[in-house]
Image (cartoon, rainbow, N blue to C red; front, side, top):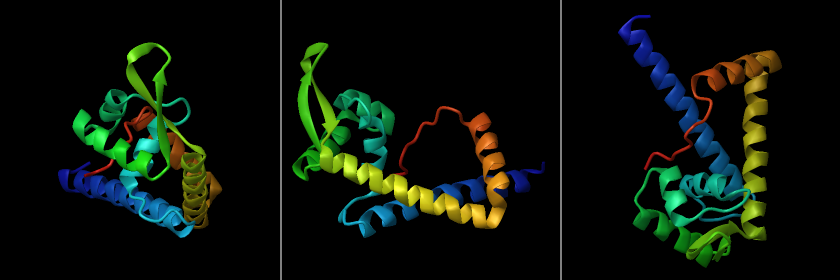
Length: 148
């Protein structure tokens, strides 16, 4: 593959990821979760299912602990998460999703399903499965990080 082709493929993958992120966020907002940003969704993906500390969330998002703490303050203030005592570390707090946070997460899943169904209209169900298999081989473990 030529350098220019590799760059074009890279751009296409980034464009697809950016569009997917935006369409999921738009779907979440359309379902009544105003003021949500993609960064919230990336945080929620780490908080589900069992919660995380601010330090763990910062590592997941690729940001400083201070930035993660500000994001946590925002989602706690808005009722999407709460701080609880950490069961294994008396000094730490565990950030867990509230029912409102779980409802927002379900809205994101519904929006993602709509987008992927649209891909099926273009690629066919078999094409979507091939895409999934290929991407899983390239980046099997993420990370899922927002582009700030």
